[in-house]
Image 1 (tube, rainbow, N blue to C red):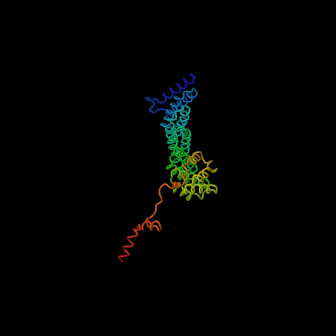
Image 2 (image 1 turned 120 degrees about the vertical axis):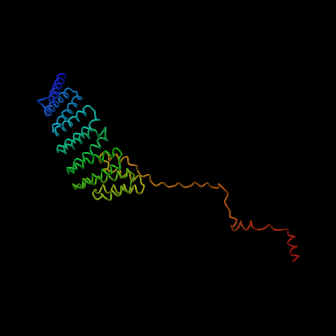
Image 3 (image 1 turned 90 degrees about the vertical axis):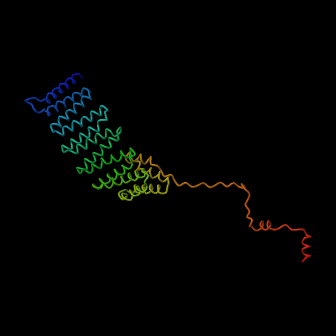
Length: 321
């Protein structure tokens, strides 16, 4: 190990010598300096001194950039990303990937730039999904500029799935629509049908039943028979507030076998609460006396009759008459 470190340090001294100027040497020798720094990086990597390896790769990249060798400059940053992965230093990966992609684009190799963004995003996807999301979005922009529609649809799919994973349903709906548009350009109806199902699920997760129904009406003609039947049952369940029917629709085989993010979304989707029926009021018998109207027939007449006077009064009254 010590011999490798000494060899690397010797390459660094040679690189620094190449960068010096004098009266007879007006311009630094960036080409040879970059080569020496690259050799030093290899030695440091073999010696498991990853910090110094990354630093030498960065210096080699800068020398290539100064020499207008942009492709080689980008390649050195690409290698530095792998070193950062070995070091578990994931915080610098996004910045390195963006710089590398920019250099590839300046060189005229946008496909290589998109590839390095994709590679870095895969490294970050599990632990730093927000950074991975931004890298995938940049990759979509890079390849669509170059009319690589099919590759753009693949990166757009990753953008939408990470947004669903992060609960960014509004942005996910827009990303799925963009992905559908890219598939339309290449005439991939089967992929559009699957995305229609995903879009309906995302709209339901947003709590927008009208938007979910609109998505089905707009793209349902690209779905196969099983997908159409399931989506019709699902939308009918939410329209009728039927949680059991919704659960059966969400448990259909093709939904369970969708991409992991959409399958989990279907599993965790809030079900309709159902229509609650008001309970009947309990009636307590003989809780109060029955009400009798004073105008009712029999009891009313009896109550209204005056009490009979003494018999003598009637006779007197009759005698006077």
